[in-house]
Image (cartoon, rainbow, N blue to C red; front, top):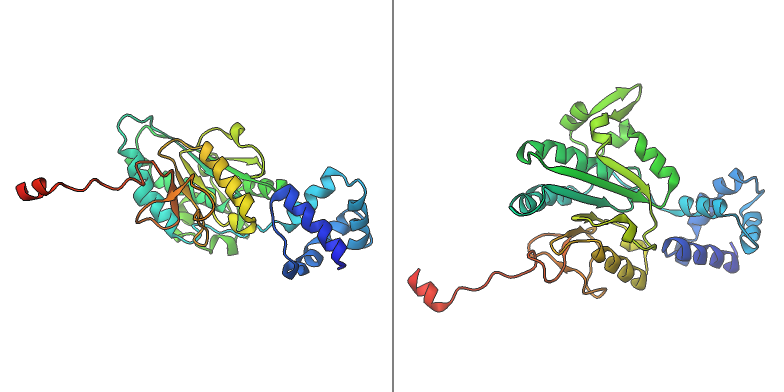
Length: 288
């Protein structure tokens, strides 16, 4: 692919999705955009590129972005964040006596839904210990196609074998020929919506917990900073943010700080989660 053609796709992806496409990943253009060119009846990617130079339709641009967006996910991916959610996050909210019994969770860049459905199953398992609580899980993605797939809650044998405990498969899924469909009570706990992380987030409302895992790695530094600071505006003072294991807020923004003792979990710097316990005075130690 010519440098000038590569730059067209690079700039388009950066502007519309925040995705940074480096020259060493240019090979992805051929493999992922050939199906788009065929769908639009262009004889080649070069012909489609010429259209992009003129006035491309919004639908074509959306198809290109969807084709280039990575949708890698699995049930209970990396395990540790879900353990932290169960053993640290939920106990914290349960312990807040004056707080409404309501938990609002955002799964950003949700892909085909495994992360958000993992959370819904986990909350279902914990419901006996949280009587009267209401949950809302909002799962968003930039791909209309992947969102339609996620809403179906229908997964292949390979997908349910990746990270999903066998007892959850038996309890929350129904087999349909060679696939597995989540039961309605689990599917209905998740609301899937289109959303671009580069847009203003005010319309989404506030979230107590945000999962934005393995997304920032595709953005440049200014975009990461902007996304993190916009997320912070959508969270209450004691809200909690999960990032991917290879992601951090260090050197990007002061809107979040790492929660001590919790891997890849972040909160607002002045929140209860980040405050160090006051040291006992010498007199108090002597009395003890």
